Image 1 (cartoon, rainbow, N blue to C red):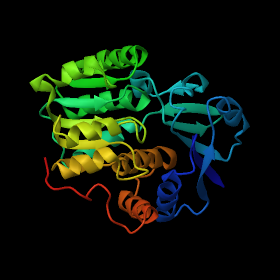
Image 2: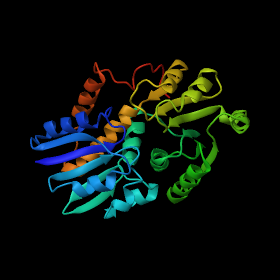
Image 3: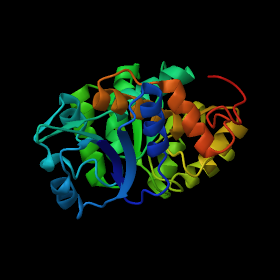
Image 4: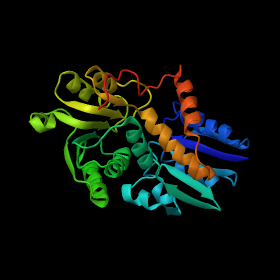
Length: 294
């Protein structure tokens, strides 16, 4: 038996098990199984220590992408570059960390045809935002303006940006005089891409700004996939933006994980179908409400 799982807290909503198990079925891996395990930072060391030789890999989501770093035996260079791992391979008693969020986001942007030949506004400065900086650099973004909620996250994000070589300017995330000041700048009104890396509900304030015409974007990418659509996605679609949802990111980063864990090419379309069926009805959430391509 080969076992794998996604760890995080909360985790009950995760679509990772349907995606990975669909891949195993398509690949004929009858003795492979993937599950979801609720695990926070405090429980992570004990859980890792308890895993037997049948365990081949783990997917990590909030709040574990940074917490796992000191528990790894080795890490792929990309993990060090962005300061976070969302994948752990378990073999020969060794824990090896990888980051599939970066290639997954690049694939999602490419699949959506979201060209980055213009300014990018990113919301958030956490682990997903740090991976997004590397993905945006790989995808050809010339520069990024990042709206962050605290000086601490701003400094971490700046360090990642310096390592990957992408110019990043930080601005205030929340409402107040400073945000009003930068949004009043005509250059802050129009973006090639608005990328939200924050949890569900946190970007609702920006949905109101979009609806009021305070800023526009040719494409809006919200990494949330549950619940969907987010208020930001709805507002962007209503204004004619191309909308990219978190399902696309989840799918492509999961496909990278399947390849790492099994050593075989991931069956992306089988995984996509399983995920969409789980979401209910098979309609692609990234296509819903889009009025135009960027």
